[in-house]
Length: 380
Image 1: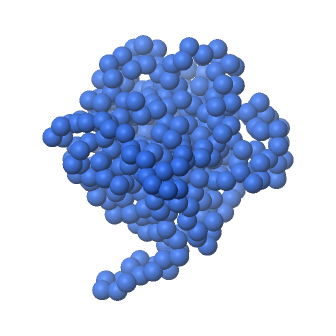
Image 2: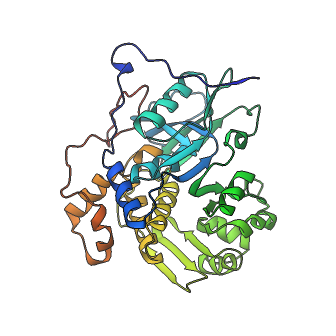
């Protein structure tokens, strides 16, 4: 199979129009970040490599489908998924994000490419369209406060890491933990970049500690509580954090709606920050939004407590929407939250990045059913 790159052809009529950037303030936020830290040499903020999925999210189900029947739902959204969840969340905050990923040459691949490159401002110069390869798809069925997922994907004819250009430079990268880091991530770290890592759910149930060997080359590890406890055989998130801290300098254990624990072995800081108190509509992608916000805060050189507090805030704002990646907040939405609730002293560190006034009529990029077509659902 031959790997080819080709542009997404323009579609006729309104579908070919340029997609509107829902986060126009992202460039200003990124410029403020780089001005504050002196990092203005044009290097990417974050490098990513991995699979991109077409996420289709059915909402408003009374329960799981019954075999032999047809079930109608009150809501449907589509959005980029997989590694795109964190790519979108980081870009919306103002980070420059380079993504090495494969896209199918089908309709889903065209939609994902346009949405990421044009609407969400993700740099796809290291990505490729692959002829005769279908875009991976995940269907999420949300019901009873939980969700079930069905996924489909065909193996790529090459490792996705092969797309990464030689000498790819960035201030940091984000990877999913394996026994060894990909070679490009090790090279980036040797060049002075930070490595942030998460870990995937182990469907085998073995939770082999061999996976943790890769932490020797990681700077910040961000597992959720269940994963952290399973890999360390610890009985509590705090005990898991202590065990992981022996392997990696900074550990953040995400506890969902409860908040997050974090510790820095170098500075000796230890914090717990409670999650934002908010009515959650859909938790899809909240962990990725948390990680994206934590990475932004790390590059901004905020304290450990401020990093976790900001990550909790962004993750909390994201669960108000049915959408996965497109639920990630923009700075104007963060500003609107504080316009309604007040900017308390504990969030004063965000003031340089907040819009002067909330933008109440800014259009949100909702999940779509196609090329930029907004959908309507009961919770929109």
